[in-house]
Length: 227
Image (cartoon, rainbow, N blue to C red; front, side, top):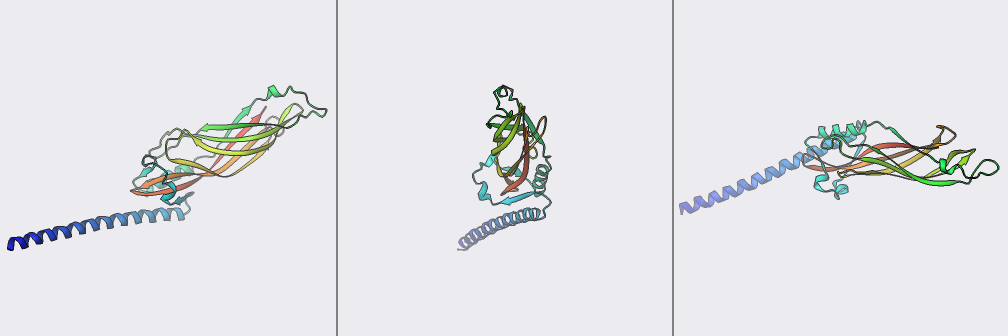
């Protein structure tokens, strides 16, 4: 009888201990997650960095190996800062239209409007935690109209501007929000089109087990010269 009582008491004590331990672990994990969430929200509100947090549901399409992992909020902050500080560089290309310049012009030295399409791409590898030298190209594609004035090509319109990443091996997507363009002179009037694209990269992050998405704003610039 006594042994049975002691055995029952031991089983009860063990069960209580297991429940208490499980509850404590769950409570600690919840507290840690809440702490990280609060730190990230405070960082976003501080406006010291140009990014926006998004719910994990918006990056649910990503695979586990596409999520960028950090051990601390400080590591996340450093990564975003590096992306924010990337210099906006104008990437330039030139198209030789000499083969079309031989066509007969009218009496005032002008031809009818012509059109074309082009994609400008440049090497822009990601860097930072787990992504040093990661292959990536930025692409800006568009359609354009031009005419020949006194033997010189002159832009008249740019349309259907689209931008995107290619070659990338992590879960990041580029989202274009606005575009603009203007014409300038390189060799002759309006022979150069300068295109500006605003948007953000959407990435998935995991900070000490807490998963969240972030929009990191950026601007791309590219130009095309006709000759």
